[in-house]
Length: 141
Image 1: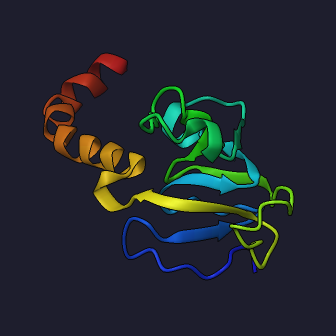
Image 2: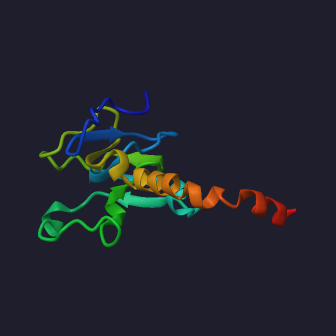
């Protein structure tokens, strides 16, 4: 089994994921451990990105900036986990995941997630794209 069972009914649930071809099901903040994530489906970037846990002691005073400063602490929905590690065992506030993956906090799900926003953009732009399909096809020939 490549992932621990987790309820993803909404924001605030904890998720434990490990390595493999698992697609991240939601936007989530890494609380404990680290991961290498392939974000090619969202960004087109071919190099996997290293993600690490948010340092609660130093980062607690600032607002979460998922697209900027704190991007290295967030795994986005639709991306693929290449590898994951549980982190050190010195943090007693967080339990180790049952499958030695990193522990995350669900931030956004569904259409509110990064993948959901991308899907909405594609869906609502379909009419504009398909209107000239015949002309575009002829131009490419």
